[in-house]
Length: 261
Image (tube, rainbow, N blue to C red; front, side, top):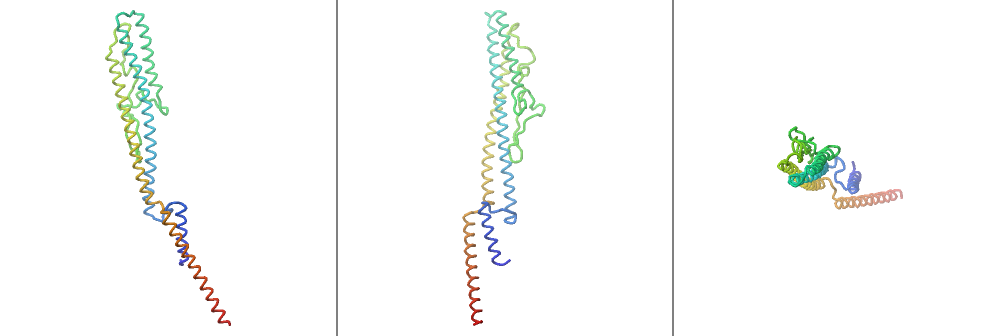
């Protein structure tokens, strides 16, 4: 390869780097740098997907917590009705009316456990529980690792026990309602803590991604100002070579004419 070919190749390399904005456009530009930058690129893309996974799981957790809020309100109303039914001034007919509302609230709790879904998965019917080792895994980092979410069974029979709530024939045991509320509140607190954890995971992923992107940029991106300077230098050298070659040709022409003359 002669000098002109080398200069032309260097000029073309600078032009490609300026056009693409990248110092490494093929393995021959920097084999080791390419391998490192591709590895960093994989981590960056993995973290981006991990962040999306975490945000999806956070939406699931928030959906479940919204359902638990409804169940908690229904339990509070049942407790209120139980206290009302214990009042001695009420007739049996009064208590039957109260019992009708309690029955409807109990049915609504069960309906809520069947209705609260995320991506067609029921969240509050006990399908994801620690006892059966069934839980929701969060692929939150570049390697697919992350926390797991456990959701308990929030049906009326699980919260209040198999015995019917009957305020017509006997006073309501208010400890049953309090225990059920405690269980619901514990699940809500757990989900709130998980949601906060997911916020922290997203923040960590974003900071890590920023640092990885900066490292990859230092390896792979072109210094456009430097490449532009190199390209201008090569263009100037090529112009000087062409001018020198033209002068040599002119001098050779003069020498030939003098010999002929």
